[in-house]
Every structure is written in C-alpha cells, then in structure tokens.
Image 1 (cartoon, rainbow, N blue to C red):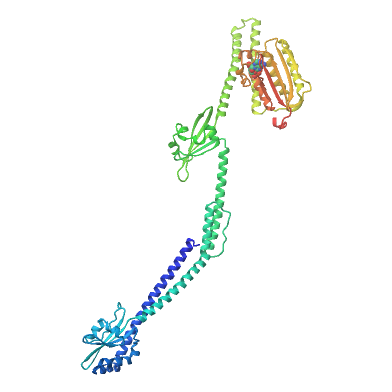
Image 2: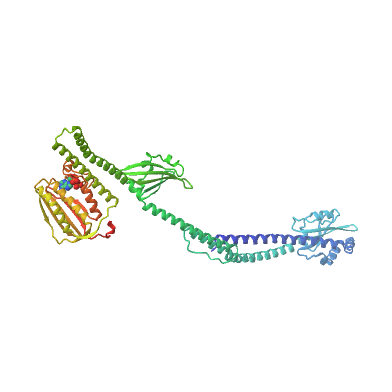
Length: 591
Ligand code: ADP
C-alpha cells in the first residue's frame, strides 16, 4: 500500500509532528515547573514579609510551650501559606539541633533530613535557596522568642506539579496521536494531488523506456506537475518522431545493404565483425562469421593502417576468390565512441572477362587481317619486283589471289560490322509474320546449287503447314543459310544433308543434320564464339571467317530463340534452331 514516496511523506509528517510535540511538551512542562517553583517562593516571601505574621510567630515562640503555640498559629495561616498537609507541609524544628518538634506531617517530620536551607536557618538566616535538582522545594525561617529558638520549615514535594505535568504529558500524547492521524490523512491527500501524478509520470517514463509511445499522459492541473506532464508528453512525442526517423533511416540502410550488389563488411576498432551483407558473403564465398579481417584482408591491407586513414580517404586493392575477381575499397569510419574499418567489395569478374574477350577479339581481328594483308603484299611485291618479267597467266593468277584476299577482308569487315551493330543494338529487326516453311524453302533453293556442286544429297523433311512466326524474315533466312552452308562446307563431297522442321509448345524448330566431319565434343560449346573455328585452315580454305555462327546466335537471341548443336551419336553434325511463334513483348521490344 505504501509506495516509497508516500511512505517518505508519512515519515516526514510523523517526525515533524512528534518532534514538534516533544519540543512543545518539554517547553510547557519546564515552564509549568518553574512557574510553580517561582510562585512557591513568592508566596513564602509574601507570607513571611508580613510583619504581623512574623511578630506573631515571635510572640508565640517566646511562650513556654512555644512549639505548640507556633503550631496553632501555623494552622491559622495554613491557607496563606498554601499548606495542604499532602504535598506541602510545615515543620517546627529545634533551631539548635534541627530536630523535628511538631508539624502538619508527623511521619515526614520523623525522617526529615537536614537540607541546605535548614542548615542556613540553624545559623540564624532565612534559608530560601531553590535547588533545581531536588525533588522538593523548601524554606526554613528561624524564629526566636525569648530563649526559645525554632525554625519554621515549609516543604513542598512537588507532587502537585508532577501531577500537573503528568496530565500535561497525557494531553500532549493525545494531541500527538491526533496529529499523527491528521498527518496520515494529510499524506493521503498530498499523495492524491502530488505523488499520483509523479507516479503516473514515472510509469509513463518506464513505458517509453520500454518502447511504448502509444499512451499520452493526462494533464490534470495547471501547476508545476501539470507543466511537467505537458513537457513530458512533448518530449515523448519528439522522441517518438526522432526514433521513427532513425528507424526509418536504419531500415533504408538495411534494405540498401541487403539488396546492393556490392558487398559491404564493417569491423569495429577491435576487428570484431559488425556487419556483413549477403553480397559480401557471396563474393567472399564464406559464412558471415568466417569473414575474419585478419584472415582475408590483413595480408592485403593491415588493419591498423586502414584504421589510421583520414576520413574521406580510401585505399583500393584486388582480391581473387576462386574464379572471381573482386575489387576492394578500404576506408576508416568513426562513430562517436571508437570507429572502425569498412570494406566495400565490387565484383569485377565480368568486367575482367569482357576485357579479356575484348583483348582476345582485337588479337583475333588483327590476326585475321594480317594473313590476307601479308598475302596481298607479297603477291603485289612479286608482280612489282618481276618488273614485267612475268608471264600474263601467272600475273593474272597472282592478281586473282590479291582480289580474293581483298574479298576475304571485305567479308571479315562486313561480318564485324554486322556483329558490332548487333552488339550495340543499332540493327533494327524488321518484324513481320511469315510462314516458317516458306523461309526454309527459300533457303533450300538458294543453297541447292552449291550442294549439288559438292555432290551432296539435300533433303527436306517438313510439313508445308508449319505455323506463321513473328520475326525478321531476312535475318532468319541468313541464320538458316549460315547453318546450311556450314553443313555443305564441312561435309566431304557426296554427303547427305537433311533438313527437318516442326513445331511444339509455341515454338518452331529446324534441324540441319549432315554426315560430315562433325564437331569434337570439347569444341561444341565454343563454336558460337567469335573467330572460333575447329579447323582454322579448313575454314579459311572454304572462305569462312569464324564469325558466321556468332552472328547467327546474336540474331536468334534477339528473337528470343536458341541455336544449339544436338548431342547425337554417329558421324556428322546436327544444328538445331528454335524460335518462338509469337514475340512476347511485340515488335518494339526487338527493335
Ligand atoms: P566459319 O566461317 O569458319 O564457318 P562459323 O562461325 O560459321 O565460321 O562456324 C564456326 C566453326 O564451327 C567452323 O569453323 C567449324 O569448325 C565449325 N562448324 C560449323 N558448322 C559445322 C558443321 N556442320 N560441321 C562441322 N563443323 C562445323
């Protein structure tokens, strides 16, 4: 029930009331006691200063039975002296011995001790010294009459004041009890008005610390607590917005790290892995926990060196992981506390391959051009050096070679141009619907003579009712012609070339099967590469450039089709062309 703040409040109020009442009580009781003592001595002084009373005392003392006489007089004056025979008594003592003679309290008189005041009176003076430490008050007045010497001794044992003080203490205790009750009630009232809002604020702060920003605290008053609650609500709202913004930025960054193709690995200043995105995991080909700086990057760039780099500086390096080439960028980053190292990984495998292919291509082109150029030069030089000393027939045959080598070069240049246009997308495909079988017919007709010259048996095995397809008829026929002329070229004279075609699953296909020299298994995947030829001499002899199939493959790819060598046993080669009947994205997509 008692919450800590409430408990403290109760304790404070209880302590306050208790200490206040104790001080007041002590003050009251001391005041009452000293008032009582003062009034005792004042009363005594007044009585004994009364000349009539004192001379009467003397007269009575002078009598033979002075003690009894004095007693009668004292009884007479009992009221004036406040003698009640209970707490205040009078005693008549022998002034010489201090012995008790008679008085209002026989029993007390018998055991009366010789107090300081009695001793003073025995010496002839009035003893009226107050002893604060004693539990009584007394006055001893010497009275002499004739030869009789007496002491009138009045003693008050303070019972009245003790009783009074006792009652006072009771009243104070009662008041204290009421005060305590009031303080408990007051603490509840204070708790309601002050502690409850503070506790609500505390709960609100705890909720916010737990990440719950949904509830807004109610503002019940306009006082300081009300202002504090409003400020708290404002602060919570700003905090919420800020956290949202931070969270937003974080999730943006997370998404970026997650989906970016470049790898990012971050280490803190102790080389502990902080972050490793999926791209980095893939590029480094190891699990995130195995991305240890010391193992992977330390030999390339020491950690301390990178950590010491200035902000904005970075270092580049290259790493080979299996068959991949990865470019690395090292940079130091500093967060408020420590800082660390960031490594960005960029996959340049394709870039390197392309570069290699380009180099290879340039080397191939140079090589292809050099042969005809060397031939042209050597034959032209021979004619020039002969200086007319050459027969006409030889000269003509030399010039024929020069012309045919020039044609060959023109052929290569044309093929290269075609490829370059296809590569750069500058070649427009003129898309139209045409019967697939018609295209095959036309190509067969155009190659028939050439096949006949080589004594090949050319057969067509397909239905005329093949579907219409969408494509650039001229280019498709170019592809078919290339496949067929290869079959004619790479089949020894008197061979068999069979063209079959059909359609299935939204596609048309055409296969050209020959029983020629065939293509070795190891070369099959490469014959679509530029300048790749199985037998260079033979290809060159038959006027091949090594570019025909690469051009064909590019055209087929632009039609979303495929060109492949069919894996079939037996001698010869079977080339298969597959084309979709419809172009999924229409004509525009292919232009
Ligand atoms: P080329 O102009 O040399 O014929 P291609 O690109 O058309 O160039 O063909 C590439 C290589 O593929 C040829 O050099 C040849 O070695 C091989 N080839 C293509 N078709 C056949 C086939 N029907 N039979 C055997 N080899 C073939």
